[in-house]
Image 1 (cartoon, helix red, strand yellow):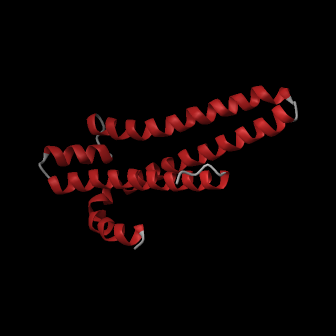
Image 2 (cartoon, rainbow, N blue to C red; image 1 turned 180 degrees about the vertical axis):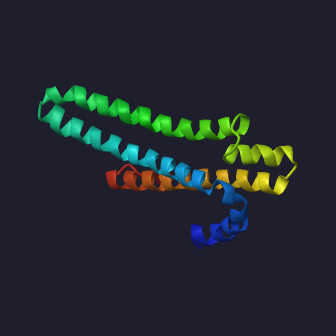
Length: 148
């Protein structure tokens, strides 16, 4: 069985509860994709650093590559903390949003909706972590440093 065949019935069951926040989920998914993309850019910048700067002795590129490395690292952290911060701030302050919907469901004792949204958050985080783990494992296998 594939992951999709196991998750599809669960996602179909909770989809009606998410109609109000579908746009925000799309934005959050885009931010989640930005993290691995920044990781790929980070790996590329290290390759350029080693090949062009240290081996080719072109040290004039070093400040640029250090800036790129710092920007990518800050970007990865910003994406992660932005996602957490948006949900937490919506929970407390916002008049609308996913965090607000969870908060309202909690206040109204609408346990089905509250737990559906929280479960969906957990599922999204787990799937993203699983995908990143698979990518990391494949990269380690190609480099010859895979764990048995």
